[in-house]
Image (cartoon, rainbow, N blue to C red):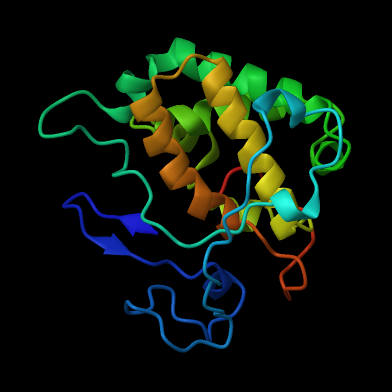
Length: 216
């Protein structure tokens, strides 16, 4: 989902980069597309205490099923109020979030193989992206170009299960970092469809690593 400077929303097709037969900005709502599959209705399940999520496999009946929902409003202010970045706690909060998130990834036997051996570079990228996504400085784009997150994740086979675990760890990282409840809820409302958009298991996408970290 792309949001213009005037607030208009457009759906950007990730497959259009590799296959010109896909429209880059298909009209909404998308009702028919060779690469489109309507999301299933969300499955609600009981949750375990947060302390029991880590250090072990998440049971299949507790995986998160995603449904497309609008992302946060670009981190923009609420009627002239502070941005989501500011309400979350600013750069210091982003650093805490990312540190706690990567601490959890380090101990996750399923997600850890999807990350590089040295987590330092990824940790810094995550800080820059999260700050920009929340409405802070656009330091990520200045250094790496357009985020194009789905394309950047093509080299990795990402399942719904992996996306669910990723989101669960991020939710716990937000809580542990002390992000206020209202800002935390708004962030998760945007992260759910974002995580779902990264799923590419069983899809015909280019798996070769990118030639450059910068994408324009």
